[in-house]
Image 1: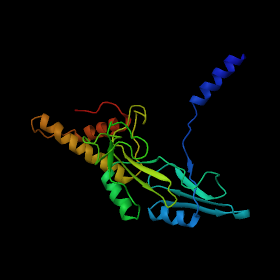
Image 2 (image 1 turned 180 degrees about the vertical axis):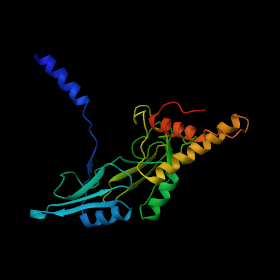
Image 3 (image 1 turned 90 degrees about the horizontal axis):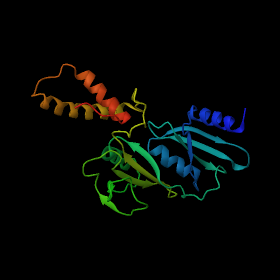
Image 4 (image 1 turned 60 degrees about the vertical axis):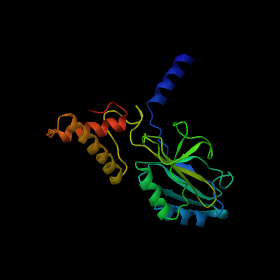
Length: 222
């Protein structure tokens, strides 16, 4: 087998391997303070393990997240507070904002970017309130942990094409699914108006198609 053939084979093999982001390591100065902060937000405590020479690893997981967060002593050489731009995806920015504020997080106002695409660095070009049309990916809120590590909430209600397999939809929690069903119900109400007010007996199929299309980024029913 030639080098080119081996490289091509290796590239194909890599494309066939799932690579799921499992853990994000954040640098903190006081492990117990960080642990109290994150568990106080309602994040699940997965592990708190100590070893020789002061080594300690704490793992927590945000509700509904497949990816966990690790901090501790001697687990990273990064400067405490230097982790920035960590995104937490939520289905309703205002509900999530209120929930975290109630649990002690010092939240920014809900904001959107002046250009309407993602957000600029720091607080540049922030405009108050959610995106005017509540466009998916367009509304944010931010907070910091006690060391200054920076987190952002980002509201995502419909995924870009290819983000979720078009053959199905996934939901990380019952509230996430409930919010998707509410959006489907609102859209279906408009659908029935366009039908002249006729009750759509096939609404379960319509709901299912709408929810899956929203998650996969494909064209929703009308």
